[in-house]
Length: 190
Image (tube, rainbow, N blue to C red):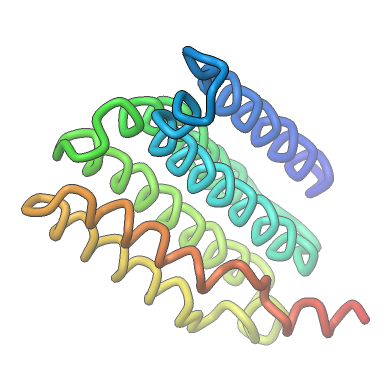
């Protein structure tokens, strides 16, 4: 299978997940700004989830710009990556209904952690497939950004056990590292 089919499938699934995510937003009960203000937490968690999905999509795109070939292992890791992304609408809906409750917050963090682990394993599998002298290996062999992100999300899960909103704060904080895609990849294509 060409990498193009994998990328197209990934793009389509992420588009569907984002569509489902937005369909979970409900209109305010009244026609006032006060009614809109009542939905502020739903809107905040929606924006966090939307930005998360956008960041995963952009960085996945950058990761596969350097890939020349894929194998069965890469296909399966990509599918498990998509599995975790597909859970975002569910966890977003649960968190926005129970923002300060432990179970929804921890579940949201576990979904984000799962997506991050799958992304890390996917990058590692691509490096293995392309060899230690490849452009992928040059960038992703010892990718500190992934390790820092995993540490922040794990810390959020642990903190979320005691202070549930800490989970969402840590998830949001972990995204800051990823807003700007890997510049070394962009330089390769300039």
